[in-house]
Image (tube, chains in turn green, orange):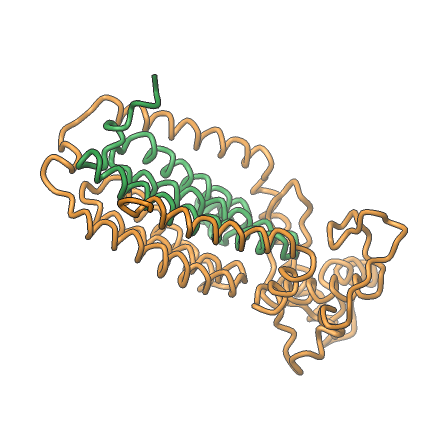
Length: 111
Length: 279
């Protein structure tokens, strides 16, 4: 029954659990940014990555018994809101010009 | 921590992972946005588990409310269909990107698990539970081994200033088991230290640029004079609205104002970008 005690060790969440979860969600968001061609979904993946970073901030704040991380997470949220507003305005602009929101249509800046 | 708190952690953790995967897998952006809302709710639950009550509310209001309404609004407005949706066929860069993501996760996990030792965590927990038993038994029977009792009191504290389930782990173990009460007690203790001027800058709490010069605030901006007395009978402060706002208007006032300017600039920029012609 060694696996029961092992499971018991990992059952209660510690800081490492939160960090691993946050890393996993960050990597999922990263894959989304690389894979998806729809600009709106790329922005959603970026929101996902920002959220995972917030989770890291808050987990470390709790671990250190301090609240500076909460303030940083608050700022990240404010910046994410600003970013979403501008990004979606750009998406609308692109849709007007190209009749589509695929990032494959936007390669002029690459060359 | 008991049974329910870890259970909810696992529920929210797997919910967050599943909905995150759904966000990047779904073909229709509308479904992506809806699963992303579910994801934000899972994150809000995790914030509550970390005693960040204010941020959990802000998460739901700002992310789940404002930002996602904006996304849904744009998705409905554009009404993507047909050739504007992504092709429903396999592409080789899906595999390559997934491998890159998994590699990055393995790297992060290696970095975390090189710092954490779960066996030490288990040992610390067992030792703590044992000491709780010893101290409780001593409170009842008065007949115990003095040396053992002293070591145990050093770990878990005197019975009259009892803080349930607190383990002071050092950084290498990354365990940080602490109940809600323990977090709040520690936080209030730090606030008092800072108020009394005994907090050292090395603790990272409100350092001033010149360590010899005391850092004084106008009375209207002073933080809680005696945090325990603010809400009689309840010292619940950590993660609530009051200390966060105190920090926003005290120590982080310049970033706060800059964020306000950033939001204003982004509003103006969004309007200009979305207008058909600026005249």
